[in-house]
Image (tube, rainbow, N blue to C red; front, top):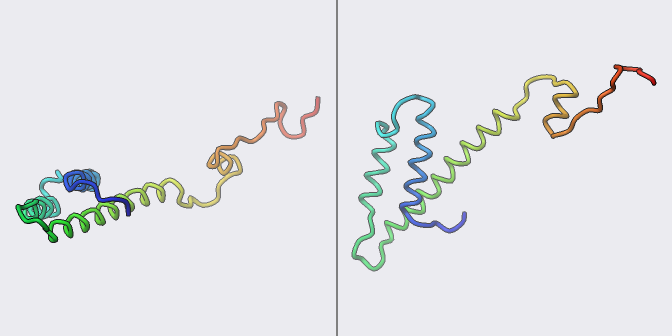
Length: 113
């Protein structure tokens, strides 16, 4: 995983993923238990006057890891919906999936000038 970045950036990313998840249910994301837990945890682990705040860094690392998991799951579902098997495809559909077009014969099959 790359550098962690700021805790507020991670927190906003987690809230964004919660919004994506709650959009399917139609329920506001602020009414979920996950939202309440995240807000409570981030408020409890704010930067304090301590020189080394190990718990705050640990929470940030766990939150960044969870954010990576949520993003990966969302991207996986999107890819699966786009490319999952739909049974037998025609040659034209298969060519279109990879960005190719079949040659067009003006007079149909067996046409000769």
